[in-house]
Image (cartoon, rainbow, N blue to C red; front, side):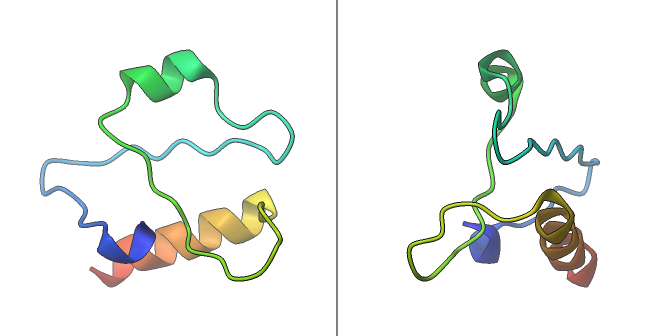
Length: 62
């Protein structure tokens, strides 16, 4: 979960997928981990620009 994520000191790459296709399974499998943005309610996706803003803000805040 995003609120439990701690960015590493050695660098970080963030990969974002779109609402329809997400991220390719090969990219996910090559990743060290995945971050999930907590959501309330029945909506199961966020606009990509909103998702990037939320995640980047949380990482910069650290």
